[in-house]
Amino acid sequence: MLSLPLELGLTARRLEEKDTAALQALCDACADYHVLIYGEPAGPGEARNLLTELPPGRTLEDKFFFGLFTPRPRLCGALDLVRDCREPGEWYLGLLLLEPGVRGKGLGEGILRAAEGWARAQGAWRIRLACAEQNTSGRRFWERHGYREDKPFPPRRMGTRETVLVELVHALE
Ligand SMILES: CC(C)(COP(=O)(O)OP(=O)(O)OC[C@H]1O[C@@H](n2cnc3c(N)ncnc32)[C@H](O)[C@@H]1OP(=O)(O)O)[C@@H](O)C(=O)NCCC(=O)NCCS
Image (cartoon, rainbow, N blue to C red; front, side, top):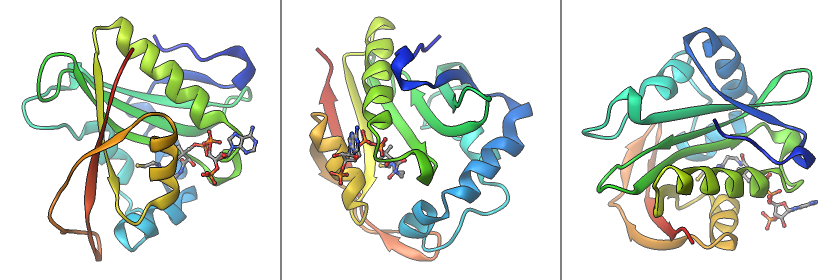
């Protein structure tokens, strides 16, 4: 189980079907992110999609979808990791999303470091992710933590807008 440093004041546990409504509320609270990436707020099925979407060739057993909780506890973020995506040991970070009120306080950094350490202990040696070209603050966050561009994809329709996804990779120490 992913454990987070005490000073973050957050706990992590894997989300299940019963958490769908709370996850949907998180997606709704992150409308800024959805509008930036998809041109529109999250649809009503977004949480269900997030909990079940998988890269080709992977199963739900390979997917670790964590909720990040305040002490109350209230869901304030989500982290999606899928193991052994394109090759053994290469994990895909499908999502790291914090609600607007808890961003910019160093929590993302703490969560990412803990997640990398946890994945490393499970046999990961590299993490890959896709960041939308227009998500400049997201990209700054990844680059600050050692993620580097691998390749851009051709523009694709995502929601109501055309988006270029850029894949970034980071080798774990
Ligand atoms: C990207 C994301 C996960 C980063 O998490 P975060 O907790 O906001 O990240 P951090 O606080 O560690 O760092 C982000 C900013 O806060 C600043 N910061 C870091 N620690 C800080 C602290 N203790 N006090 C104040 N500011 C701090 C950083 O300098 C950084 O600023 P910058 O982006 O303007 O350069 C989060 O902002 C988020 O969920 N964004 C929307 C979803 C998204 O874009 N996800 C990535 C998809 S590819």
